[in-house]
Image (cartoon, rainbow, N blue to C red; front, side):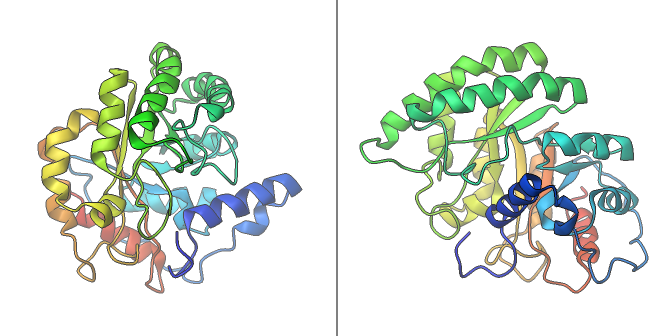
Length: 300
């Protein structure tokens, strides 16, 4: 995210988590939210969508986060490293999206540049069997930041070439690789996979049901809008959704410009069987009230 965005960003969270892992101090990154002792919000019926929460959006210790999310009605936690999967599984929730590696450059280093392919493929080759064993069905990867001399057409070809090499292993293990679409206007300057058309071109080139798009509604609203129609037109290429309020990436309520209840209904009406994971920075004093509100808004 840009320096102007308030609160912790996913990029910052990745860096902090990686640093903590290196020094064996993960616990230092998980102070309890000030409102942590507040009563759990009333549980809402699940509806037609499987809802998850991105781990980086909360500072609560992971076991406690799982307990409170389960009480709300969430079925999963999103964006977790392999050494965190067992904690979530033991809580009775699912891991809706796993990371294949801890790297500060995880977002910027993608399949658009062939120089990255060896590293990315090795990470995925290692992680895919572990994901299968842990019951994790989705693993995230990135298109990457633009590089001099690699235009969109070449980048698409590079992504197709690289991801096609790992697609058979993903299929063998029942894993879906989800390649994320991000905005390059506000949060991730230079990111090449910043429009749905780019991502769809890659998906068509690969032609595998085990490689799909992570359609981040927040990011694509910033870049192109027309969210519901775009989702309807391209649902066959989408394996996962992220949410976030526009502008600011805060709550998905009436303070921002998107009607998330209508978006959730449109997704559910398409018989989408994947996860919709909330990925916003709560601005309310009680973050779990924000998470519960988001869950209710997207219960359709």
